Length: 113
Image (cartoon, rainbow, N blue to C red; front, top):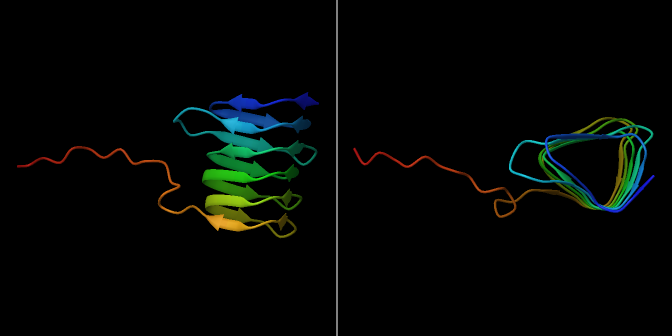
């Protein structure tokens, strides 16, 4: 069991229990997997988030949120793209990311040509 905040970049798989927030850091694409036997009590935030365990707390996914059949979520969920399998449950509010919540786009300068 881990007590406290967990910060990661790129990728993380949780197979146990975390009492604290789990947060992806940096600008790169991150992958967080919360396995069938895992339990997180706290905020979960990342790019690609795949859950088949239990999360008690809000979830924010800036890319793909995949809720597999044994996922149990108690908390509000904010997502860019949602894939929810039959059997997954959510006790909270589902909110797609609005334009204001999306990460900023970096656009190439136009050629005045």
